[in-house]
Image (cartoon, rainbow, N blue to C red; front, side, top):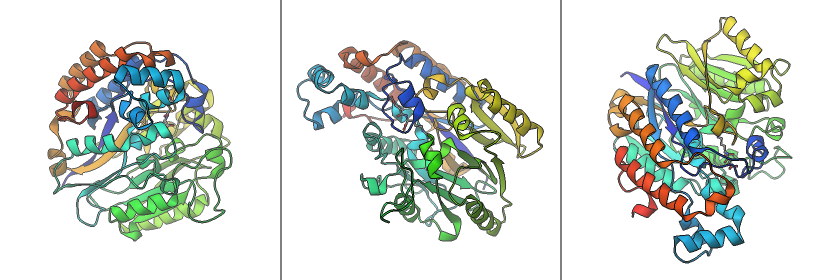
Length: 447
Ligand SMILES: N=C(N)NCCC[C@H](NC(=O)CCC(=O)O)C(=O)O
């Protein structure tokens, strides 16, 4: 059966702001307390979704979460009505208020790990929401993510939904940002590639020293078990600790793969040659000829990779079988990265086209094109079972841009997070959105 890869992008929520919440993510900490523009952020994301849909790629939308998360504040002892809860948190714990207000669910590469039906033991598509345990603001996401995924992929005969892994550092899980699926045809069995920062149960296991390793080996292994993946179709690799310490907080800041192609930096993985050899051998056993496009450090340094987000690009297989690379504008601003892209296109390799997008609002929090999307490979029958209201087309684009225009602010600072009107505006917007996307009552304030 015909199969393809769909991208589900996170719609940026109305509270998008710069709070410097992510130690180890140099864009987040570097832009802390800047003035954000939620309206522009959401429109930039929608423009990318629409452009890819117009190019013929299957594109869906994942809704934002309800923020500020007043439930989380109540669990921490802030009591009273919503306005009182916000006022007390703003006065006594502004850092906590900022954390529960983050629009971080926009980065749906961290929403879940997804295994297509061709890879799993029961022939269903498996989803495990990521516990995002390394950062408090992100650890608030997985329950709502699970509810949204169930509202979009509801058919239990085709889709299996797991709970997030135990919320504990031993099982730190960052979802698809540390997971790549290589394959020939999207509907044929592929090789799932899990990249972790450190093994958690082995005392003294190697890992970064300056910044945290967010993903553990044990989390990756648990997901492979839950999804029923065959060991001969799984490869585990450890991130290069020096790369994490240079700001590569997720593997998707240093590598991206799709189909039979990997596009990665020379310093992405520990024991890189062995990792690539294992990928190549396991793909060859599935009849797939693996192709690696490796970028040397003397052409693009780790620092340039982190600042330009060259590898946080989307690698998309066009209908002619060649690859399109969707990069953020910052890659053309950096002269060394831009020159590299020109050489890449001239090289005659598998990447035939580069498209540039302005995603500055998200980029300033460390979220590039690849962070903003969750990939789900689907057969046509599975795609037909997806909630049809979430697929991007001209009509949905018009409705969503109109909705953003009506509900979103064009400036938001840390001080605004305490404004009870922002909470009310956000709830009103999301209430309307659940109608547009036919999601049902998925938000706590609707229950
Ligand atoms: N690489 C991928 N797949 N995703 C990028 C996630 C960026 C996100 N930034 C933030 O959460 C910053 C929020 C703030 O500081 O306001 C993070 O660090 O988890």
